[in-house]
Structure formats: C-alpha cells, structure tokens
Length: 127
Image (tube, rainbow, N blue to C red; front, side, top):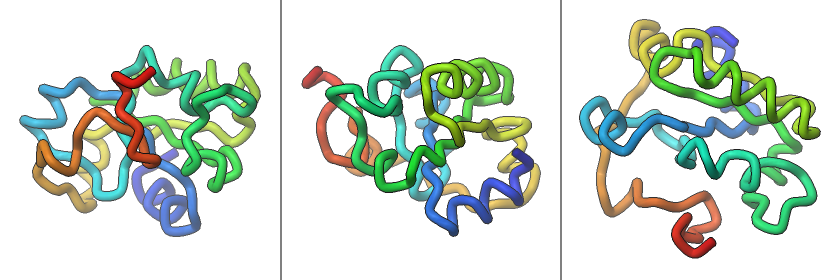
C-alpha cells in the first residue's frame, strides 16, 4: 500500500505494525499510533486464534499493515500473515522511509510510550 493509502486505512481503523529495530525507532522516530512488535513476535500477536492475539488487531478485523525500514521485510511478513489467515494484511510501500518521503507524521521515540509492548499493554517479555 502506498503511504497515502496507509494513512487513509489507519483513519478507517486499520492497525500499523512497526517491525523495525529498537535502534531504528529510537534514531528515526515512529509513526504516531503504530504498534511495535519485533519481527519474531509478529505472527503470534496478529494471527486469529492465537493465545496472545493483540486486541487492537482483533478490533481492526485483521486490517493489519506491516512496516519495516525500506519495505522489503514487511512485504514478506505481510505475505506470511495472509497465508496464516490474516486476510487483510498488507505492507507499506517504501517502509518507514516511504512514509517520511510522503511527508506524513512522525514523532520522536519515547522510551516511556514506545516500550516493548502491544496495544494491550502486555510486555513482549511477558510471553
């Protein structure tokens, strides 16, 4: 999905999942309202029927958009999510860099607000 389409999808209730590294998020900033999961946690937080499905993903009806730094890793991740039953999974063309190039909002990373957790407040380390 192109950045403008992602912004519209988010306004309509989709969830943006950032799979970039902590360092990339800290150094470059974050998309406001995005959820962060390390790439190795993505499936068990987004796939329907998993014990640790993030409530935000469930509320979004599986409208999940995956974002990495350049748009390559997120393409593979979104394809895998679709194979696993997340019917409306997609990815952000150009990744975070594409979002920034489109002039869309970015906020500085804040350790208190952007900790290792999903939308339900559960620490990734709790699993």
